[in-house]
Length: 284
Image 1 (cartoon, rainbow, N blue to C red):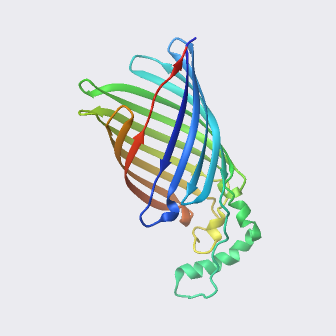
Image 2 (tube, one colour):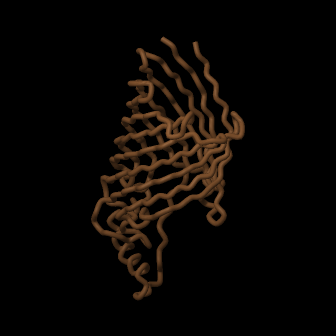
Image 3 (tube, rainbow, N blue to C red):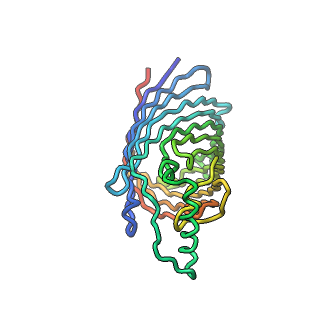
């Protein structure tokens, strides 16, 4: 059977004007092996590893791998069944919540903190252990891709998929199940431009009440296990300057709806990106 072997190395980073603590640096490396096991059917084995920093502080060491089984049903449609496993080792120290010594009865946040400090005794000094995010994430998913032409002689593709996942964390705060549904539209445009549109929805029911639900400044619904619903949308325009250099502009918006206030937020990101890439294969 035919096969292909490849190495993928990458670097992702960003810089914020006002919030330096969110400046991310993330180099990563992956090796893949594609093996054709039948006509129009192939399997990919792909281990990977990466390390990231926030500002200048170590944030996350990550490693894992994936196995994907793909089959081409027609010239324009193929499907994929995949499973992934990630091992996450967060490198930062977990700090205790702030303690407010002076309580203003007219200040809702301080009153909530007073109540929360009393409720924190439910966890005692165990809160930091509960918030340990180190753990293993397992995913199983299915997706299909259909190729087409909205513009004559310019290729496009529509991808639709979904997955279920499980995150088994060292700390009780982060252990959860989850589902995600996603869709992606890509299409070539005239003059070496390309467009990509992405949308997804994730549902994360956690197994325990979050310790943040009873901590200073983060009080919210009491007694309920944490539940997150996450909407994500992204639009990106690419321009291929050369075979190895691509410029892009991206807009991304996310809405994380959670019953724990510290995890309930919306975010918008607008950015410009320079991508250097080199593609080659070692084939038999």
